[in-house]
Length: 120
Image (cartoon, rainbow, N blue to C red; front, side):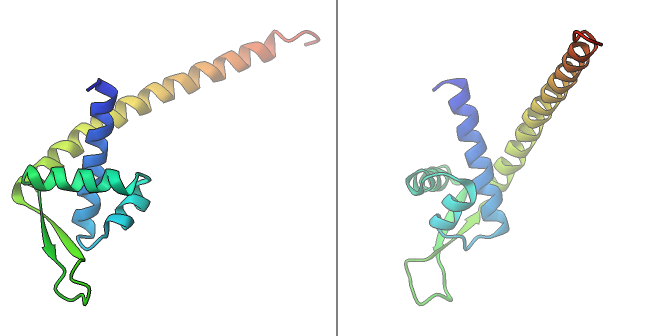
């Protein structure tokens, strides 16, 4: 798997774990819609998280529809979410700094172009 794909997969895991910690009763459709990924992608991710022992699936007790699940982060899942959060923040801060530098460079180019415009 390429580095970009690994980062994308890690971001999806982080976002799914974060969403489930906030709302364990989210349906797979809710998760897909909130994260802008396919329902199949959510299903695949959830199954992988269960297999790794990061979340547990339980039937939603108060629901008449026993196909509904609640997704609970395990202690291992909470630890993984914490680690993913740190890597996510570090990556986003690097992206932010690079974007900030690019904005400064583009502004300087625009100012220089405006100063050297004919007729000024």
